[in-house]
Image (cartoon, rainbow, N blue to C red; front, side, top):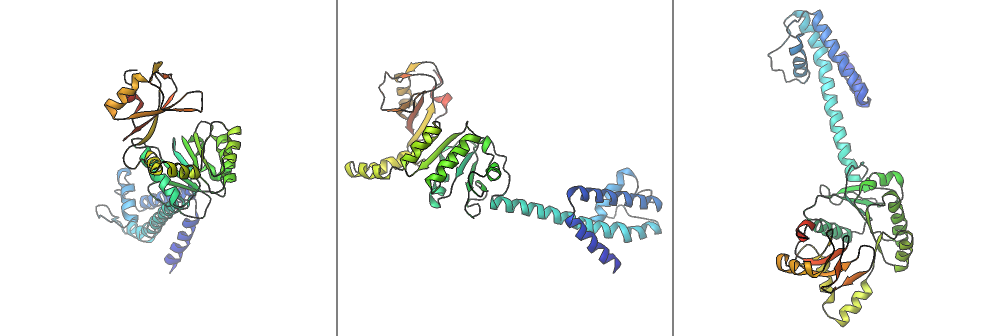
Length: 343
């Protein structure tokens, strides 16, 4: 009865104890067991090469039998101290490890874990199937690279794609502590797609403040709100809703909607990519034919380094300078070193 009560008391104590206390108790258990074996003159068990092996085997009930007490006092001490206390400690340690792993997994599912991702992509906002489609497109668009995707939401939900993306839940997207869990400062890309334009606006300002080096993209239903953001954060790329424009274009030129969808869809067929030119000054003709003949890719537009304007269908004598961005259509993304190997 006494041993049962003692084990219950020790179990309750260990479950509530922190790591330091647990380590101290384990050390006290090992030292006291060693001292008792010295008193019992168990010379074989107290040999430095044997003691910890014997103690772990005994307390975990493996009991190989290759080492055991031989003196009457040693047998009594092992039966009333080493084994009962060792069993309790072994069980409690397993329980604490199980609780820790369970809590870690649960935190990850609920979005409460502090992430350590670097050069990752953060998606802020949840729009059901549209967000899932966005994740699919991003994973296809970044083929060949190992950028992690972190979904950050303010809605009460769990990770919709456990094992495929990381997940963070925060009270709101300007909450310092909650957004810190996304490791915002180390992100390479930030995509803001919330249902409300005013939330998107404040979130973009917050992200620009805490990581001005990341490429920030924000989706807006109202272009006036997007223009307001551009006045404060010119480097943020604002994506407006083009539903009306697409309706008009498809009505005048049937099939336009399917064409634009194909250009944007990276999950199959030809699609649109971009690459930055980092070589010497040349003309477009120096690379246009190579793209077509070697890569079956077509250059369709160029964005100058110091301008937001995009020149569609540029002439072959268009001057290319270091820092310009080329937009092209291809079946796969082309590495820059492959595109401009001779430039």
